[in-house]
Length: 218
Image 1 (tube, rainbow, N blue to C red):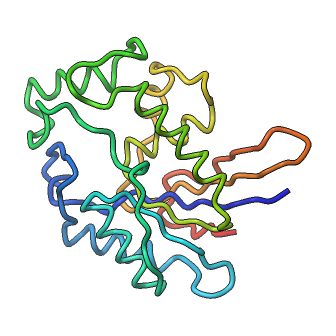
Image 2: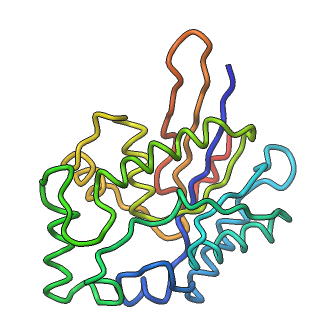
């Protein structure tokens, strides 16, 4: 039996986050976002119990966040496309969230009860995102490192944890409810564990959600 601890970190605030503008792969951290990332970086132990690897989404905002953490811990960053944010519909990228047409699309895909395979445009839909979360958990389970930092994005992080809790039975309705009622702040963490058992089913646990202050690194 062996247990891994995974520290999922949402990227720091971006300039576009502050303006409530929907993003694609581009979008750098704001000054506040860089400060948030550094504050999170300083919470990790540098000696006993230190993380062994940092893996990040290759998007600009996650790269910047991961590099700030890596510099503080004197580590290098690895990148993995499984950690990228959900691809937004092309119609809303670069637009402010309060615009009527943007709000209409977001309400439909994020806040309504809909079929698991609903696709409004060219976005990554629920079924796509769920499958990517499944692949990420397999990827984590096969890594040798016991303490892993993963820098990712808010929507996908909610999907990762939702899939941990429900597995293949997760529906779009359940995911949207969990997503709506469980916000994840910029530069906060979801701390999870994965335990490999020899004689029973392997086990994922959510230990801490939206953690900004507690310093729970046990």
